[in-house]
Amino acid sequence: MTYHAKSEFMRVMIERGFLADCTDYQALDAALVKGVVPTYIGYDATAASLHVGHLLNIMMLRWLQKTGHKPITLMGGGTTKVGDPSFRADERPLLTPAQIDANIAGMQQVFARYLSYGEGASDALMLNNAEWLDDLNYLDFLRDIGRHFSVNRMLAFESVKSRLDREQSLSFLEFNYMILQAYDFLELHRRYGCLLQMGGSDQWGNIINGIDLTRRVLDDEIYGLTSPLLTTSDGRKMGKSQGGAVWLNGEMLSPYDFWQFWRNTTDADVGRFLKLYTELPVEECDRLGALQGSEINAAKVILANEVTTLLHGAEAAAAAEATARAVFEQGGVGDELEVVTLEAAKLDGGLSVSHFLVAAGLVASGKEAKRLVAENGLRFNNEPVNDANATVTAETVGEELKVSIGKKKHKLVRLA
Image 1 (cartoon, helix red, strand yellow):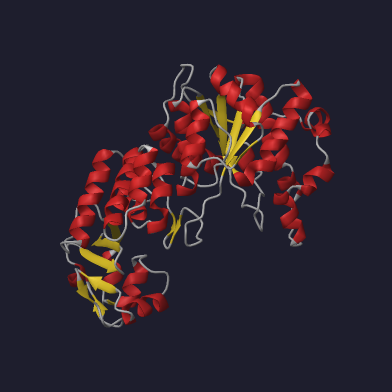
Image 2 (tube, helix red, strand yellow):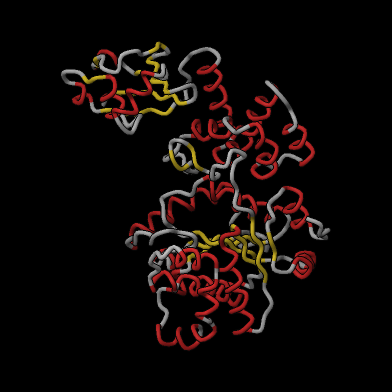
């Protein structure tokens, strides 16, 4: 990035690696210097929690507010009813209004950790696009908004083109999504003076549509800024672990497991992740990221503590670190291990080790359990388990049983 930013926000975006592209660097930078810039990111309510893949853009909103501007978190109560087709091979399952409302409630818990909401000039706003989408008159919408969209141009967007090139169906419902998202930007500008939309680089086409629509309808200039789509140094999509999505809600993923996700960062990613996911000075991030050998592990603990503190608080981070030390260095149990509850009746007559692991939800299949045992990857209360057919009873579990799968996954099983 060769652009030399004048505004503090743009400097942070460039220095810390948040910036992939911008529709007009100089004009946006000038607007950021001139005064408060209301800025939005949209989040469709497709799950009960946000996950680590969302955290990059949440940190962008946090930095936006820290540098004196106004974040808008837009909940997709309306657009979730359609579903974003961008770079998907199939249509999203449709959710009921009750499911959407429940998901939004779960997502809002996370934003409150990172942003300050209120009535002040730079206080964040929490909005829901159902406010203006639910009551749209279809014919009026087609006439007033639809006429500004060229189907030829929409078909040329990479998110649509890639789907059609693979000869995969794209429903008319999904095709409308980009028009609705463009309309969101227009409405946010009209109602709240929103000047900027941010998102991942896969949202570039949708952002451009909103800018173009606003120019056509109101003759106003607004802007777009995208972040890179992150992959880890070994090529995996950021936010995925062997256990699935890394959720941000503590009820869906314990603070300890969240901490462990960051502690297990690949050496090559430590410096980059410190810049993106913590507020440590850039020079310190570079210093920690350059450490070698066993010293890089200390940097990973700092990364895990900093990120966990932002989301779950300093006490949760300290407890997770203490538990990790007890589990890995001292072979203990620790206070923060996730507890898995199993119905005692399922152990009447006993279960084989492999069936026990499946019943407790610790592995996906008996085949996986047998492979785990064969590779010496299973321990009960720190003792190796060598027979997948050995019997597990209520007496085996006792008050609680620590189950270790590999070196990094540890759970406590208790009977109910």
